[in-house]
Length: 195
Image: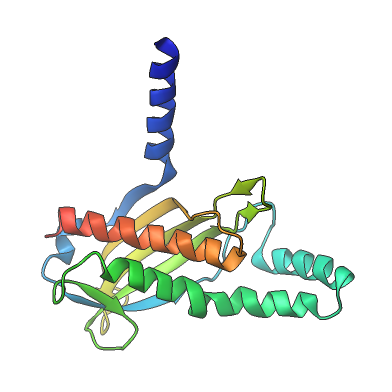
């Protein structure tokens, strides 16, 4: 019985610490009444575990792939950057928008709103899946909201840490799942705190 109680506490702790949110500026109430956001994604100064910089990470991964197959390094680099527009960003948009009914709240990249929601990724871990063993991807991001004509006047800002993705086989898809989780958590909190 004690063993089960301990296991329950561990499971709850893991769930609670899996993804954290810390408001940096403003309040969730600042978002009340805003029904449309134009998204901006930023990846500058991205932190990657075990590397001093994204450049160092790419150099190492490209070298290892190039040693196995000519051209594989450049292919990896190209997909690393292309996945942002092709996978992460669409996944975030899809996951966020499906939490709301038509006409409630929507995010997109159509340049159709006076409000901007900036997703600045500060940390990225791709995780892995080697069949018998897998590790979830993780993303940290600062999400800021401001009026398009006043980008220096942040209305609201929140930092999310450890948004975890499903450990699927493809690295880009694993990271995309972390963005889906990030969007889901953000949308649910907005519904709860700024409705």
